[in-house]
Amino acid sequence: MHVWKFGGTSVGKPERMRSIRNLITEDNTRKVVVLSALSGSTNALLAIGESLKASNDDDANAKIDALKAHYDTFVADLYATEAGKAAGQQVIDSEFSFIRSLVGIKPFTLKQEKELVAEGELLSTQLFQAYLAEEGVPSALLPALEFMRIDADNEPEIKFTEETLAEMLPAHDDKQIIVTQGFICRNPRGEVDNLKRGGSDYTASLIGGAIRADEIQIWTDIDGMHNNDPRIVKNTFPVRELTFDEAAELAYFGAKILHPSTITPARMFGVPVRLKNTMEPAAPGTLIADRTSSEVFKAIAAKDGITALYIHSTRMLNAYGFLRRIFEIFEKYKTPVDMLATSEVSVSVTIDNTDRIQEISDELSTFCTLEEPDHDQTIICIVGNFSADNEGVALKVFNAMQNIPIRMISYGGTESNLSLLIHGKYKADALNALNDGLFAR
Image 1: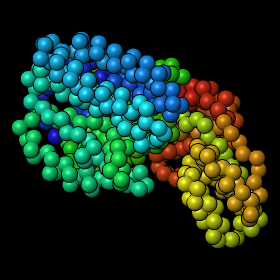
Image 2: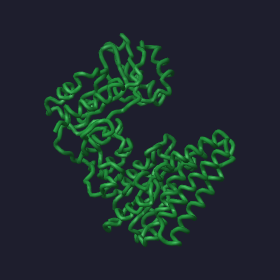
Image 3: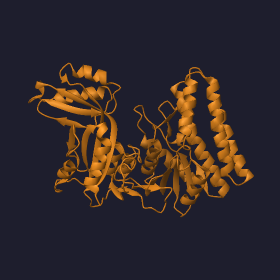
Image 4: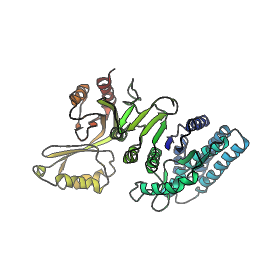
């Protein structure tokens, strides 16, 4: 069984939905098809929520009318029969009736906002399921809110998903296609919640791991994961094979095609992940699995919005427990550290969440001296096969970066990642220089 996920641009127009129908029925492989909201819908729903939070009901109603008109047109174009159009219209009328019921609720809380945003996935999946029914495709709709749940730390309860799907799926053994929602879930209170933006990838990976799928496919509008950012660098190319570790590093450090959490469940259960392009379905895309190709340098990603903290203390010299004290403070304020560099009497760290930076600095100052933080930094992550037997890896990187100031280096923590901290203003120059230096063809 396969798990295939399609993002917002892949389902954003009626002709795209028709293309997906053709893709998923080309062979007899049973599939769980995970859909995002139609492109633009999540932002539109969030905008409605902002009006409701501001108690501007007239503005909210106007935005609801505009969004419903978009869906009305979508239904008119998607279905070929009167019965199909009626089924699609019934979905829209039902879901928009709920959306309108949120107008006037005071105060409009985060709970209602999450219920509102979930409507994007509820609409897209029901419309697609109705379209499959019109086309005579044996299929079923499996509500994600019945099997996808997060715990008090906002982490998915994969054991619950595994056990619940094991009970639900046998009832649909006669169906070739199982449709479900990405992104949405329930929290420990049973309320509608979500896996954050981009979480449909995560949903697909969680389902794939839970059912021990043969393969997870993430379909987007890009031909796999590229070796560099094509928005900034010319002459990039798709990477055909990556290991789980390599893909996880790239996703975390800025490769937009893949949600950072996606790799974890797939790697946990050894389920390969393939990145495919809905615009060019014949293209091989990128395969993420245990095996890897022989290239030393695979790809580059960049993560913006980084802040560097510089911590000094003579008490660190020949002392134990010093680093523990530092990281206990970051743990206390739930602030992850991206990079770390140490010397005899200093520690440099980078963070991408500065919400608690003042509290962190105040506590660190009780036993350390802090320099002024550096904001607007960028981490450049270079991924590949950097085992100790591969000579000249660092030399090639630093030769490429010879004209760009480097503030921090992380190398050797894994055999797949070399990271550099630079000021954000040098990002484009760094990505192009590395592309020329490491991938010149």
